[in-house]
Length: 296
Image (tube, rainbow, N blue to C red):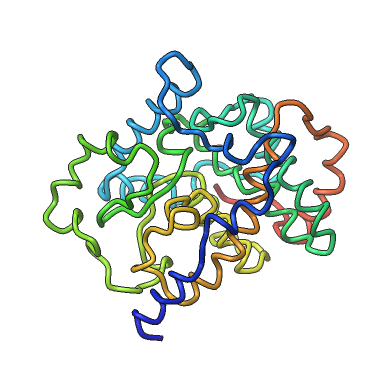
């Protein structure tokens, strides 16, 4: 399909409408999710803003390549999916980039999975994707700074998308913004080259995707797209980077958006899941799709 045909179809897809199918979730108005407004008196908002400044200053193309060299040797440890979930649970890791909740992040995986299970009882692979989608955050237990683990992702090696959070105030000290190639619309890429051919900012999405590929997980491609791009909000919610997308990316966006309904709107501090009670059910799914010890 010609590039202009892909762009035309993309323009017809209102990502924000698909991402927000209901007016409220968990009695919380939709507009109150992902509130990145600046308020120096709010400690959580300030924590989030400062993390994104660090991220947008340091996530250069060269930095991402250095993370590939460090992490994609898959030589840090060996462990099962449940091992990693247990370690994250014991660590009490909280997501410093998240303005919506302030509880250990492992609860969020179970909340997401159970939300999917309720509405998609026939799609076990989808439920499992909800459970594991954030476990790439295990990098934070190996001294990786949270700005290189958490938060929204974006493409490096080209102009930053206009809908990136804090876009106008957080990239001033990133040297790629002054690079003669990396600062241009297409940068190092070709029109409609496909997201599989771009370099994403480094974080838990890309890491877990690469771990699952390396260990030959039996999840379908839709699941791998959800994992790799669920934090790519400038694309699936903001409509940025469509000029780099292939038709496959446009088609797969529907699955990412369906996933993000549960990723985003099942978050609550009020009703935390009983992880011990749910583990036996999800262990069966792990054994089916991602069995045994993995190389991380």
